[in-house]
Length: 623
Ligand code: GP9
Ligand code: MN
Image (cartoon, rainbow, N blue to C red):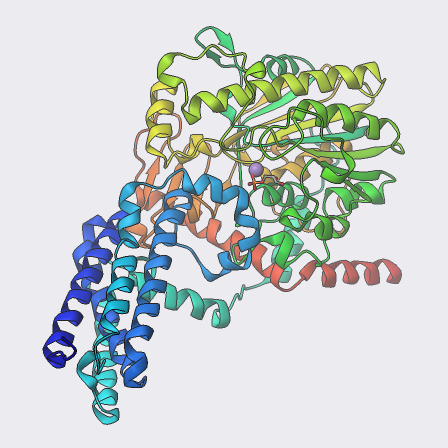
């Protein structure tokens, strides 16, 4: 057989393709948690795909089938990526994610963990369609898709374009349940690309805002002002350390005995402290903590804005006579740290290349115990006073730990679960931190040093069903975003006699102002968007990743902005009682959360500190 009734076959082919795509759209909307409006979204997506088919008619007859196959495959792959990314990050991918494609290694591993068999339905038809195309090519002529002529093709294109555009705007305007710009596959991605190039980031009264911010950050006469003045500063940013493990037992076994011991003496422990990331994960935790600015969402801050002028903790300490060193046992180029650190104010970066990777390696590289040991050797030869910033590695997802370090006896139901592996890993890091403190003592480096310890971000994603189930059972209450993103901050000041537990809500953005108060250093140049948590009772933690922009956590409210962008679809609850809170009461703080983040993003995009620090210098010269 070498001839086909072309038109009939082509009609059947097109109908089959549309049916396949419609099923795909239904699966996609289900996986991206739009089940309540799935049918409406899928019909709109179907409209778009008909439009795509009408576009293909502009290609020469020979190239139509292959073009359509390629476009269809790309769409399928993007849908697959979206669904996987959504499961982990609670939002769809953006083209900005592609900019950091080389950095997805560590995150990628985490994402694959949340893939379900259903996700593969999104790409399941690509292979059979390709095989069919190759088989079909043998028959001539291949005049696919009704073989429209130029004029007819243009007519089809114009009609479908008009239909799609008008139905998108009509549905958006008339259907209160739907926001296609956040929910529908094509509309979302088109508007995402549009926003990158054309969206304006304008904020009102920036000068006024900065003036007020600066006035807020004067510490003199404040509680605990200068109690650690002149001390060396060590900050340990612990991979994946969540707050729930602190002071907690598992079947009678203490999970973090060393941290617990530290908290009991000469420490301030912040137990309502939250992560605050953008798109740069661990590197964002570093950035926000050091700079008291929100990390970017239009890409990764250390990559997009690394060369900006900053005036965060390392710079401030340098201005106060400190030497500054960053320690991290992984590749120096990862998260662009090697380029970013000098602009952050670090004199030196001790990276994977400077450590001897002694066995056993754990996860991404050198084990934490060895990392700390070798870091002490560097620290003791560092010029005083010093700032040492250490970023750990061993408790990185998926928490694989050699057997000899596993000290927690797990119940059968927790063996080989992320939860079980996580608590083993955290317990291992706790031991390593304990050894580090002992080493500091032995080297005479302990007493004149202030030691800060905090988690970079969560280890156990609450969107993973198994994590959620196990954690909810373990904690005795719903494992939701607020508990997932809650990390400990411990500030240990040896021989200070200070013993405090601060339960004011705070986040990584508050680290710098809080620490500067203790160090008795006034930040006269920088812009800090956080606040000193020791001298306030009104906490506020705005979020933009995992919980979406506009979400926030306060002492008695957690507000989680709906991912469809429709305010009334959001959730709010009291973190103490876990009872729902009326959404109407959250509007003002929601607006504040959006405004704070927009201002921070404006500062980054316009490299505002450069201008501001220059202005400050000019002012100083005039005096
Ligand atoms: C890699 C380490 C882990 O350098 O910081 O990165 P993460 O995957 O957690 O962002
Ligand atoms: Mn991390």
